[in-house]
Length: 442
Image (cartoon, rainbow, N blue to C red; front, side):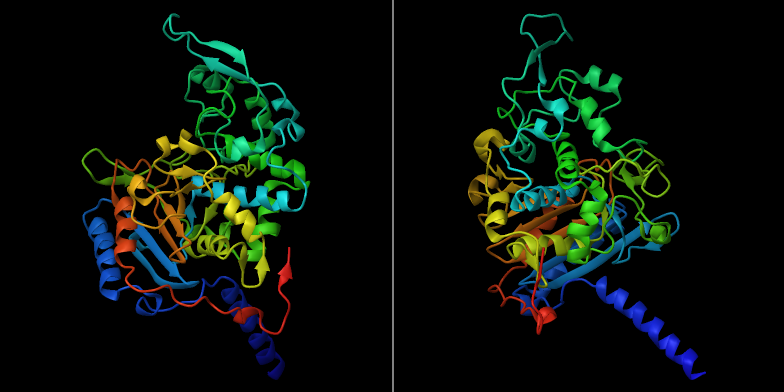
């Protein structure tokens, strides 16, 4: 009997240790973090109002300041039809929020001397040695395009800054992309490696000359293949062993283990009348993240994650590349990633763009509340994050709404976060988790 009790205690401890690994950043109260509790309650009231009015099925909001979570709340339902409440460990399709992970992977390899930002992409994917650009002649027939050679090779930096001239197949050569079966950001249904798709992409004409325009598209998926070639690992293996496991991001992956299926949030679509309806199965609706082929790892838009997992990634960046004694990047590299590399080519210069992030350079020109140096990005599924280094703050808004019908809740979330900031930045979290031992080096 004692042996059985001992085994029970052992397995219970194992279970508890697994929960510890899955825990979020340390917690604190809003007041201790320099936030007004009454103003945080204002944020919560707006989220509940949108849920109650049927504008959105469910939302999770998270604010961390000074390395501690001061607000973390789930609203509404993750499955309306089954009346399942939104749970804090819900798993979301994060689409283009995957790009931040891929940017970290590329810069990590840069730090290890395995690539340079100025390297031509053809060094890793020879099919990109000579690319072409589609042009629309001013005096030509409607729908007719011309194709000219690219003036120079595309570089890794072009891809990171989305100045490679590569769209998601919606530019002048849209018909050719459609015929090639390479259109849009969704890859979870493809039964082939991402490298094969990107090699075919190289033969299609792009939308602009390298370096001349900011064009949003397949650039980060190409970077995922560069990571595979430079590291000798598949992208899922690299993310898991070099980023997710060191950062204890235990619920982040390209495809969902079957035992976590009940935590995957249902996707809803905005309706013309201002309500929502369940999105269709497959495709960009519910997606093929559970029962699909699990063969194509999209670094641009393929990941699943939770608010607490993603907060650990962002906190690592906010800390200058380190979290809980694990250093992934140097502070200098994080500064490089979150500086404006594109001048006025992005948004006319109202905000800048770095190595995967939109960056505030001037508060007035940006039109956003916040501080100079804040960086952010979002997701097709209507999730978004921002990091404010001056305020030592991470803020995450997660939902699953596609299309979003022009909903304004994301913009209101940013306003509501900043209106709650009323006090100074609290002291940084001491490295208690690493006391008595040397930090792990990556």
